Image (tube, rainbow, N blue to C red; front, side):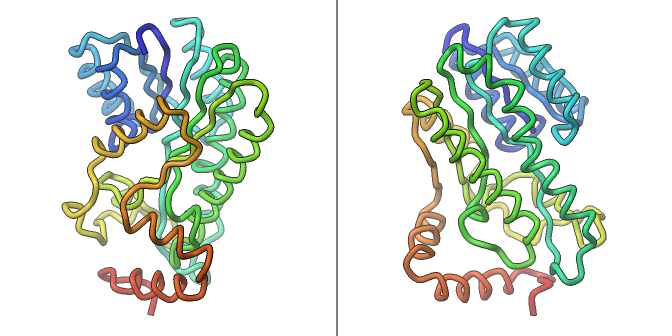
Length: 268
């Protein structure tokens, strides 16, 4: 990865931050993007201490011009793009019948269109180097999660887009990977949206029992190196994806029961 350029969205915390540090340790030039500039600068300082070159860009991936600016600044500073990791994302927890449509639109704007916008502007540069486009998705992109209709919809859409992009570029040398970490200890549940669009705040899950962001980043980096198509993490995640292909009704019942056990679950 020496002198290669990696762009990571949603890099101010969690999996994005861990991926940035992992690639910095491999000698890559890092471009980190997020909405929170203060947190982004903290990550940038950690990367500088490792000895890697870093560019921080404030970017709201739901805004086309922000995504265009992210790629333009990268090319101005480094002159190339080798890997784009579309990691920026937001979750939600609410029954669809109770949820305001603005919540669905916001989830789709960040999780789906954010991936589309960044990939659109970065793709011409990535194709020159036969590089990688990565989408950090979820098991929710394989199995519809109750009280996560907006989140599941956005991840299904992301995976459909990336799968089609992969097939479209079978003869160009482009590598496309969809990474599904399963439940990971990160900030995404704390910032999840409620039915009215307000921030959920307290996570309903025991983060200590989950895979760490650093562990996920290690798998993602290795997956990109091996040019994997898909990456499904945790034994639970792999089992759910497998069973859903053959026993969808059984999986739906198991998923419903599992999600209903969350503290203050909106599922009754």
